[in-house]
Image 1 (spheres, helix red, strand yellow):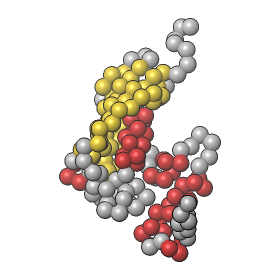
Image 2: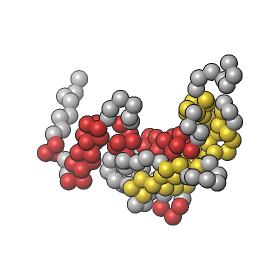
Image 3: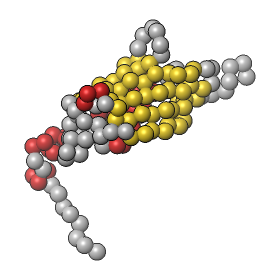
Image 4: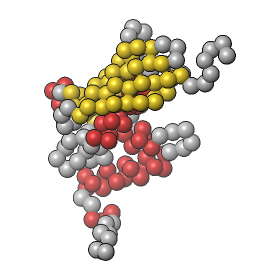
Length: 155
């Protein structure tokens, strides 16, 4: 087997070091019931008050979420969309399924996420989420299903 690559903090350039330090800080903040990815991304989606049920989120780009050419990592885009969709869905509903289509590399200074509830019943909701990059280009589109937890009302 080839020898393992050994990398130390001294091998990182300043930008990579900032990403590593951010990851370490996020790990230190994780407690029961909290999410490493929310701490790493430093984002909490905001649910809109009144009007159409929706949530929005803006995430500044950086090495902790992108690759060396400045595109957002696919898993990060998916996680950000899922977090925002969960914020838009009724609070008693939990994410049970998500399908995503990657349409364009997530580029620019920030990714903007908009999640809109398309259907919300007592037991099931469907959320349509768009992650947009530079020039409001759609980088990712997600449809997710959220279900109520616990027994149905009246049982």
